[in-house]
Image (cartoon, rainbow, N blue to C red):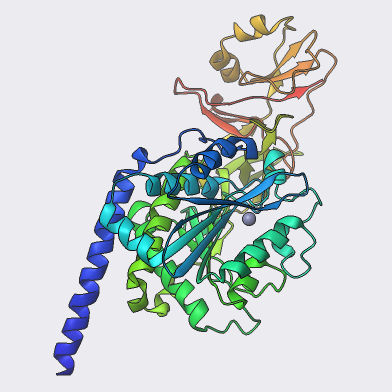
Amino acid sequence: MKYIVLVLIGLFSFSLMGQSENITTQLFDSYDNYKESSIGKRRIKRADIQPLIDKYSNNKKFKVKKVGTSIGGKYLSLISIGTGEINVFLWSQMHGDEPTATQAIFDILNFFDSSDFKTEKDAILANLTVHFLPMLNPDGAELFQRRNLLGIDINRDALRLQSPESQTLKRVRDSLDADFGFNLHDQSTYYNAERTEKPATISYLAPAYNYEKDINETRGNAMKIIVFMNDILQKYAPGQVGRYNDDFEPRAFGDNIQKWGTSTILIESGGYAGDIEKQEIRKLNYTSILSAIYTIAKKSYEAISIDEYEKIPENDRKLFDLKITGATYNLMGNTYTIDLGINQVEVDYPDHNSFWYSSRVLDQGDLSTYYGYETVDASGYTIKQAKAYPTTLNTFEEVKALNFKNILKQGYGYVPMSTIPLKQVNSPFPVHLIGKKYTVPELNLMPGINPTFFLEKDGKIEYAIINGFLVNLKESIINVPNGMIYR
Ligand SMILES: [Zn+2]
């Protein structure tokens, strides 16, 4: 008898998982039909989403309400759909520079507005009411910064509630008494799945609601949904999922919303090789969040074991954009073996619509426990100082006419100019531009410096590192988005 029951349970859960897996595949494959194409890069602002919110205000399927105002006077809007008794509440971008899930929310809204997937949608909308609060920190988004205009981290204001944005989040949560909450963030691209070179493309947390990290039904359900979403991610980004440390943070919203009785799922969008604007990660958000909404509607998550949650690898922060290993470095007449960890650091233009790079050496020494999005084995190579080009040029046209590959091969990384326009903040070339009186300092590798040097083997320069970007001089492509200016 026991055996038969087990077989039946096995078949039952197999068919449930099979069914939802099938829908997930269809959601992933048909994504382009629903992608909101008007918001396709990370620096999006409140004004960019207003036309989309207006569209849903005029659409009878949705309810749109102004639920608050930011310190800077920007509206906070709640968009709801469905008639079910279970309330699911998703909020994004409480940190202004974390926009990936905001974009995914508008993709999900497009999905709900379409006439496709009728069976699944009917099941969702009959059982759930789904509420979206995109871009909780519009003032931060305007400046592409984490904090709001009060200069505080909204995610440390869940108790003191000094910010109107925090008050709004608490008020909406309380008024809905939401059963499930999705707390949507971006994390640094330098997180990896522990002891692997794989970036933590998505990290999850079912936040603790006390220091003891107890698991009650509320938190347990959040863990089950995370296990469900992790299974989906493993298919599309194998090994690229991390689990956040669950130490209790009494001031954070996730921890408190869990405590207030809403099963809270924290989702952090991290890095994915080559996906600078995080559009692949946006698609993974869309697919996994929508699948999670469906599993909540069907209650199929209930059969999942919370033991699986602990098996998701922990988040670590051991990635660099570029890792150089085993290079030979000459210092004061002696030679040393050194690894370098380099990050390509973004600097915003004043309008916060786009950015350039001012890269840094982050660490050096034995970095064998670290990883890189790009790695160069530099054993047998010697680090060489970059020199200034011997001729001073007068115009950008003259610089542009240089054969950059040839001058890099000759060890030149800096080009002197008679005048550099003051409004120019960086070099649009794969070399640095220097004023005619500027002297290139002697290379002294140290964390914090701009990574610019060459790798030489048997007297021949084979690689250039300019502003933290690697150029393989045996290949024809030079991928250095910009150099620096030293006046
Ligand atoms: Zn965040």
